[in-house]
Amino acid sequence: MRKRELFPTNWCLFIIGPVLLELVGAFRLQPLVRRQGASSLLRRRETGREPLSLLRGAQGEGEDPQFRVGHGYDIHRLAPGLTLTIGGIDIPYEKGTEAHSDGDVVFHSLCDAIFGALSLPDIGQQFPDTDPRWKGAASCVFMEEAFRQMDERGYRIGNADVTLILERPKVKDFKPKMVDRICELLRAPHSRVNVKARTHEKVDSVGESRALECHVVVVLEKKP
Figure (cartoon, one colour):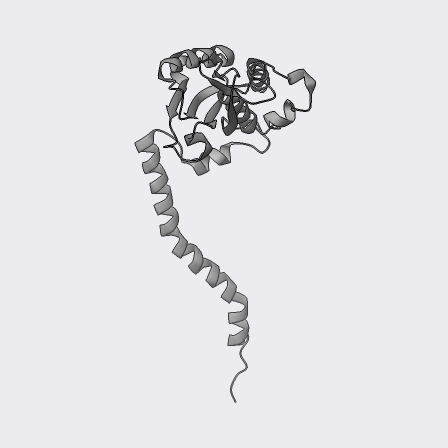
């Protein structure tokens, strides 16, 4: 007579099966882990920096990031008999910007880029055109407020890249003065601020000299 098995085969498989699967899975993952570790070490040696995944892990929840990036944009119509102010500089021209304030597209874009980087309401919410206080206001007031909010949160300008788009007037000779004014208001060294200008190749309202527009990208960095 056949002896009864102490532990039937099917019960043994039921008990040790999951354990075997985990062991096999861990064994198969070992080369991948080694490859990832070697890759991270190689990147660290090549760049002198920790991989981004490690940097993210080192930053605790709720902590302010070391860097913040913001984008700003503005556009205004041009009309005869008005003052044209760009980057804090009054530029002689037959047309000026139609706006509630002075219509400085560079300063407005810079403010919005800073507010965006700080996750704050945009310039239209902070200085609404329904408020008579801002009627005809110089945009340097907005820049000073943008700097104050940036400074209070412990940030400074890491880099500011301005792209001004207009067909006329030509602003090549005015760009250094614009950079000077921006650096003055944002307490930034000249090496961190750039102003570029280009045409719109006679396309749409900007290309037909009926408007001008501006894009700005800023990087804010934590103050030491």
